[in-house]
Length: 509
Image (cartoon, rainbow, N blue to C red; front, top):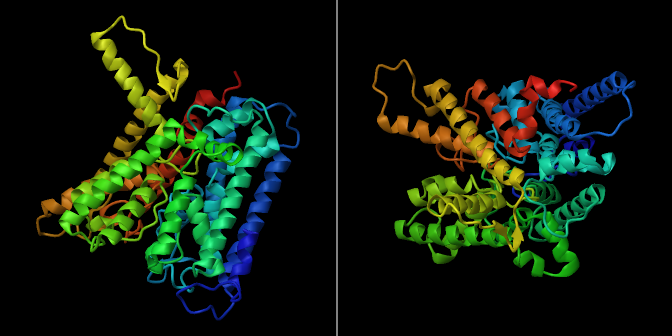
């Protein structure tokens, strides 16, 4: 929070397409200082409470508790600057604490969903709070907890924490020492952020805008400093730069490291990366084709259509959520394709969210294997991933369980939202004597589904009332609280959060 304080002063609070700040943001400074004091106090109390704790090695159970509880605590503490600074949502209405938690969790989980309606008004959202908002992306990019590995060192706890943050089968050549791995990943991540910030400044952004958008890009988060997101810059050069770095951010960081030390052969020979790039290419081609036929907004020419298609496909698949065009106005094929991409996500070991490409590859191979066993019950065929045998039963079982969990959480949350979210969210009054239009009911079903998908998979924007030009401000407090947990479940890979509600998890035996 201390790093956000300098941006309360006019010298640094300077944006590319807005007038320079004219006065010191005292409200933002107060909110940050008071939040820092509360965070320090809680830290000291926890330190005091644990002063007699036995110095012992942490095991998997303790590591999972650390992962889940630290994200809960980070969400609450991260909400304090918004709440205490009096950050406004709209029409002079300050955030409730649930809304502040929503914005905090959206930042740390790199979702990029927001309840703020006017980012360009310093009186509503001070520059220092905007920077805090973007810096939560930076902290959550590779996972706060992965960075803890550098402190906790090696052992089963470190491995469990890394697995919770970077799921999927380990890549060949990954360094055995967890501490070293975490430091190398942090170095690559920090270096790419610095490079992108410099490139953005070269392309015309101010330091403030460049830093905030670099955090949002490399963390695959999507928080912007403008209401129109990156579309506010209206620059193809900035958009193509962002596309390149979003693709890098959605790539396994182990592969990026191996590419740096051994050349691109490992990268382009990896099955997950090949599938990742293939999906981007196929989806971009399909959306471009149908977008040009339907003459959708943003498809005035082949060049603009290709740029908008590629940008939105990469943005959604990597779970970044930046927008340059209102894709909610595109044809149904494009909207449906983007909704499907929400359930794919980036590569394992990347900053991207979603189910991860490697899980889909494994799920597809397991499904084919099981279908073959139906008509060839005696066949013995090994499942291979890139020439390597995937013969770990627990891993394959875990893939199936994970898909079932995500499906169950999605359906349950969708039904809760459809049932209990008031109709006024969609702009009509429940007590109106007029009959409710069937199209509006259809919109509610689809909008709720996309809102759940966008938060559970850490995308940010969805369709309809949470589309590219909309936000989550209109939802009820209960819905926003549900979204907080969905974003956390999606970012911390479900298991580390779900185990917290099981009484048997807390027993000593």
